Length: 99
Image (cartoon, rainbow, N blue to C red; front, side):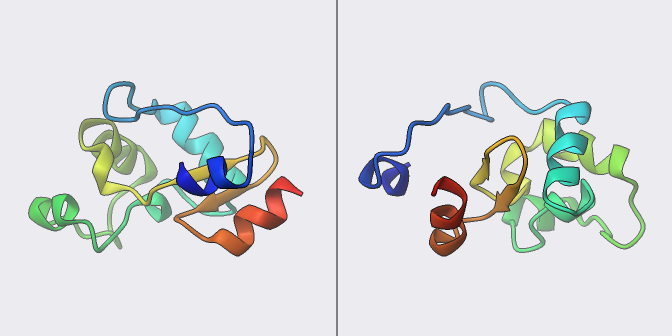
């Protein structure tokens, strides 16, 4: 948020803790990011570690349920322009997207 404000980028913000992403939204974001819904899960997340999930064996549908019920298990932030997705805080990629 601070990076977007500093660079005067207009954006819509969604608090995923109050308004979790539905499975269809996650699938769409994954396609934009050229990954899977499972790929949106952050293996370093303490919440995900606590669930003891094997990321090599779960389906995208199962990953979507995990993210819906535990939004902090996915990489954050997600920044999209509707055509592309940057997963995680990557200022260089943010800058490329907003140019």
